[in-house]
Amino acid sequence: MTCERKTIAGKKVTDTSLRAKAQQMREAQEKAERRTRSIIIAVVTVIVIAVIATVGVIISQQISAKNEAQNANPSDYLGDYASGQPIRYSHLGIGQVDDSLPTVTEYFDYSCHHCANLEVLIGKDLLAGADNGEYNIEFQPVKTVGMEYANVATSASLIVAQRDPEHWGAFHQGLMAYFAAQYKAGNGTVIQNATNSWEQVKTIASQVGVSSDVVSSLPVNVATDYLTTATDTWSNANFTNRESKGTPEFIKDHTDKLTLSGSDSASIMASLRSGLGL
Image 1 (cartoon, one colour):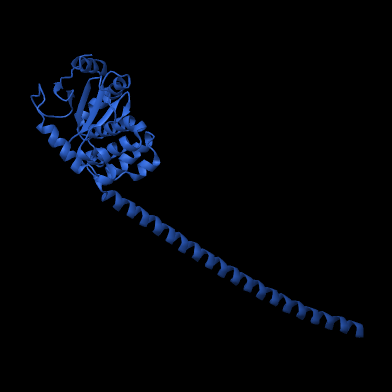
Image 2 (cartoon, one colour):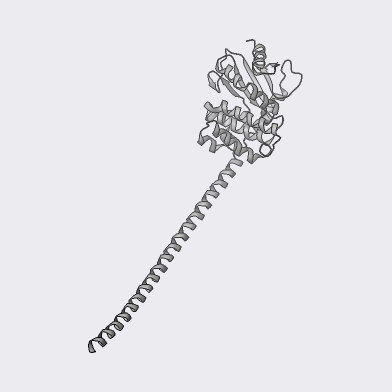
């Protein structure tokens, strides 16, 4: 009997001890969980603050870049083109001409659909003739239609001609092809908006391989004064055989207006070569 009572008493003592131990374990677990939650909350808070700060910096940089692009100083970008000079193209490269060859000057507007359509039709063959040493080309942007796209495209074209001449030909053709497609589709959401045009022009530049450094530096518009000067000079010129003024216009050796004819690239290029005496 005595032994039985001690066993029962021992069990009671043991049960009490186990319950106390379990309570301690629960309290310790709850304390650990609270500490873990606090750490997680603190870490998440730090991460959120860091993300907000990073996003703020990125947005600030984007705003700064956009403001800089919109308020760019033409003299910082146009260099030798600041006075309204054309983009010269020959077998010697961008910016150079071969004085032994005839020169054809093309007056055009990046927002002129006739110019764009003709470029789509003969652009590659026109450049190929110059690459083959048949003639020099002067590409002279002027203002005849003057959509926002023309300002942005002219600015970018002049800059790429200086900073990444290897890709200028493809870029010029890409600019014209895009405008031709938008005009044909009757879509003015980009070509009539400066900011949208700027974003699209940068996309075209990237697509044809223009250096990312050059693309990121392209301003919205530094061509306003350039186009005014170039247009005034073109409008006041007295070219032989010039009965009317309009773009595109092709001039031989800065004096004689060329009349192009034909409905396909081969025939149009044949009339150009004939006018140049080739």
